[in-house]
Length: 283
Image 1 (cartoon, helix red, strand yellow):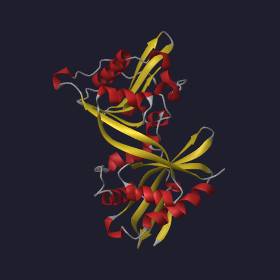
Image 2: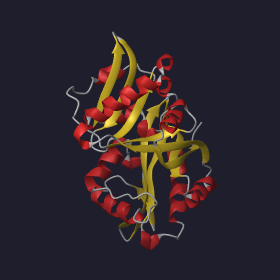
Image 3: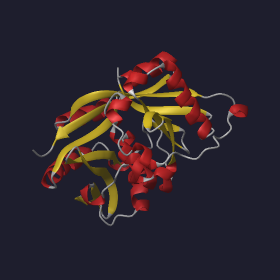
Image 4: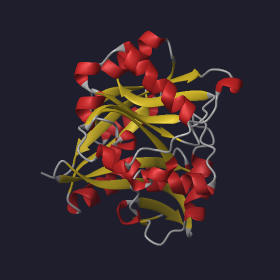
């Protein structure tokens, strides 16, 4: 076995290993090559910081790593960790993480974080043995939205990206967004999303960001002094209408945050929950 970073490894090779590794996953991961490439891009994938396990030139295990400069330091994120079926139960995942963390430390990363399904106890044991600790619980919701006859796309185009230049996403969202839900994700490829804003003159009152193709809400933000059910419902309706969504999903709401409580109160289906886990690398 050879362990090395993924610089120069093409997306087709990664996709082949990814599909095999996640074929028995609790949440189906049937991504096309293009979808996987998009997901990696939006998670700030960095080949030079990622790690693969190769056997006779074949990629049999991997940790895809995203890297961002946040709060004045460099942070790393586990986009996906997997081992293909034929090589599972050989502790390759353990070896990947054991080798990766010192590499991230040497590269100046302050932290390394990931998400794991609450029911995936085996993975949690693996991560805890590597020093990861649970930092919070993240909840995911979905809802069928209206009838097809009601879904007429919003006539206006997305608000300008500049509308969120000075926004405090923690204050508006009621918690620190997860890696994949941060505004940094939206800014990588804003064309994939519709941005809806509600303003009073120059003052931003509320905003919502939804992915056009998956109908997944990236962020829902309301100024703390304006948090009312009426404004919440208006914003959700505008997002659904803007992309003609037959259903809506919102992922990774911090458990018991104001937003999480809203979706509980609305009766949306809690489809899955995750733990966010992290380890300190440098500093």
